[in-house]
Image (cartoon, rainbow, N blue to C red; front, side, top):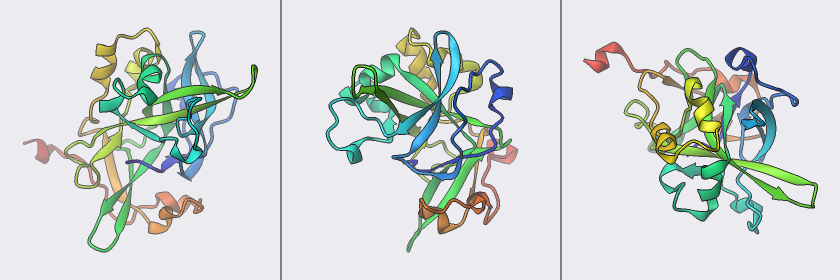
Amino acid sequence: MTGRLHVQNLPLTRLLPTLATPEPLIESPNLAPRRPISAIRLEQGQYRLSSLFWGLTPPWLEVLDHAPHCARAETLESRAMFRDAFSARRCVIPVSGFYVWKTQPRSKQPYLVTQVSRAPLLLGALWCRYHTTLTAFTDSAALITVPANLLLSPLTDRLPVTIPSHALAAWLNPDTDTETLNSLLAPAPLELLGAFPVSKHVNNPAYQSPACAHPNGSMLRWTVSQEL
């Protein structure tokens, strides 16, 4: 389950020229849950960047530490926690990468997963709104996870779902039918993502050095020979 994100140097206006950015992108080389996070939503027909709390907090949630930062794709329509948000309140979290941990005999080795081209990734997510007064509210989000693809399954069993830019309009539109949405909840194409080992310093969420993203080994990526 993904619990850390890498968000830095994202050319979002190149990716989405019509994106409104009334708030600056929240950047971090090691962004942990229970923190503000930047999301892209569709508001009045326009893509808009805004800040959300990373951890889904519906109005009836009593313990903040119980706010899920991830939601399994298989449970989106069956769990009350996620059902309404999946139906009408979807967003994407733009990132430059995300961390996963490979279990080893005596420890866990962190890996940074990025797009092979190092272009931004749009991670599928849900959001909800909790009103504290008639006019004040807090918006929160949870990433959606799907089974890891064949390349990355040796590192972890689940990964955040990636939404391709050409499908962004359908994903964010609250009127999109469930069949179309479910077709997007699939493991990432084998050639899209790569992963490389990084320092175990990222295990500490207080570690905010750019060195978080420095490779400690070669990138694991899908090659033509693997397809043959």
